Length: 184
Length: 196
Image (tube, rainbow over the protein chains, first blue to last red):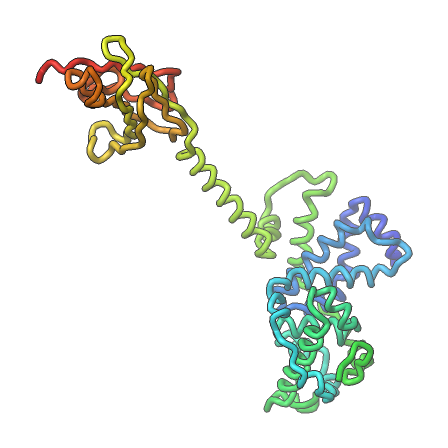
């Protein structure tokens, strides 16, 4: 398989085949990210489309010594944030509930779910919860970084995460939803 | 309590696989990207295809603000072209070739000359200066009737009472002033009323 470097060079020369190849190489992985950040498949496809347009438009800004996939992930996460911005405006208005933060329950049940089940649970979260949960738990960003990315305070980020965990926990304990994969 | 360094309540290891979760996107996504990229690629001229339309409809936020802005711009242009005051009507009033110093100029907007009471609207009035001059500024596009009214304290009153441009006593015989055929000056001669 052609290395990313050569593929990028060809894309920069507006080679259509290279663009399609680049898309084919990363679309599934990036679509996975989009699905996590979006509320449904249509939204995810919008993010995917917009994200790849940005990738091709900004390909010349990619530093060749960096890891291409990391750069791609960053673009898609930023695209998801941008597109969800309207829904995320309420974030700043939500007060911090200290009770959420003192909750030490872990979401171990989640790790036993299959990926599709996890995805469905995450997609059911409100936009703000989903965004912070993705950024903190899955991407590994700190609350400070999330605050900068979403233009919210650190406490709001923590509050959103706590809310997300509480909602997920409630979904896991719902009758019929089960607390763990074995009950699905 | 969750802190920035402490993710212990949700172990990252459990989520690593999910971090690399993959799913196959539907083929129309690439078609839409292709259509949007196509315009900027060498060798591809602009052409309208269903893919172009799809690309502009999805995502929705791309098309609707553009259409809204275009619509508003067209509406604004229409309003600007139809009502924006841009004309001037000026002239002089005289009686027997002497300037009429004491009088008022009235301007009426005419939509249909044959139905006067419904279609003639008062637009504005201005006093004549000592040389009998008058001027209306910022007049919207349209047709107008110009009337000069002699003041009662004028020495010409009541023998000379009023006149429509150019020198008619009755509006129906007056000459219409059209903003698309404007002249530099509109002289109005107030005739003597002989019938009374």
